[in-house]
Amino acid sequence: MKLISTDFSNLGKKTIYDFGDDEAINELFKDEESTKDEITREFFDDAEHLVRFQWMKDLAGLLLHTDPNAKKFFNAVEKEFEKYWKNREEKAKKGIIID
Image 1 (cartoon, rainbow, N blue to C red):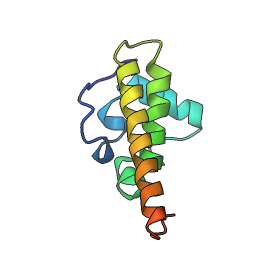
Image 2: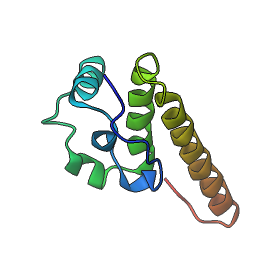
Image 3: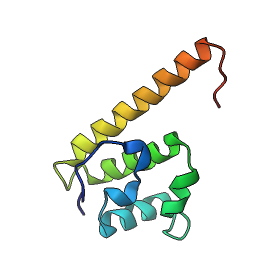
Image 4: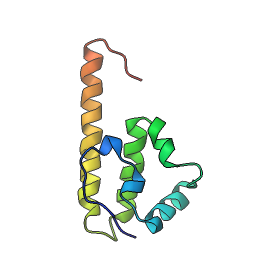
């Protein structure tokens, strides 16, 4: 299992399929009791950022013991989570409801 890309820019537009090889993705699906039929690239087109980032974080966690770049990936996803929550809190202060 390995990370197939170390370009962590624009994570909001990428999916697990951009980062994990087939073996890693299959293992992730086994852990999540899902399949490629359910979690397609199109699934991520409609998914919220938090869903997209959670799948990436889970993939990075799975790869932490097999690929040295997975830690960088994990940290990049964590930063995206932080940005999302900060932005959400700022909008809430301005009276914009985000759900």
